[in-house]
Image (cartoon, rainbow, N blue to C red):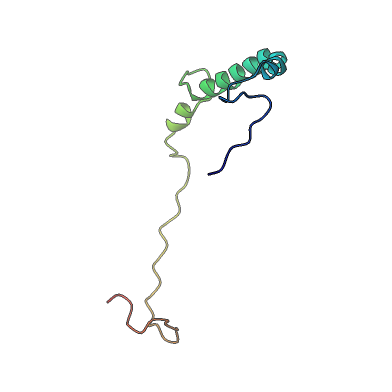
Length: 93
């Protein structure tokens, strides 16, 4: 059974030590601000407000102005002359 090596920043119950809490304290406010900004951007993109470019606005476009190409013609069927088969039985049976 493998034992997970313990870091000096965690105690025997894998809780944060006082040293880890002190080391992370200067970055706490910056991380909260950054996380809030990223979350706010994601919510802003996904919201369906009429003032912003959103996924909802793109979904409403009907693309009628985009020309559609014609369906390609099906090529004539040719016999499988000269093909190599790796099975001993015919395919499809």
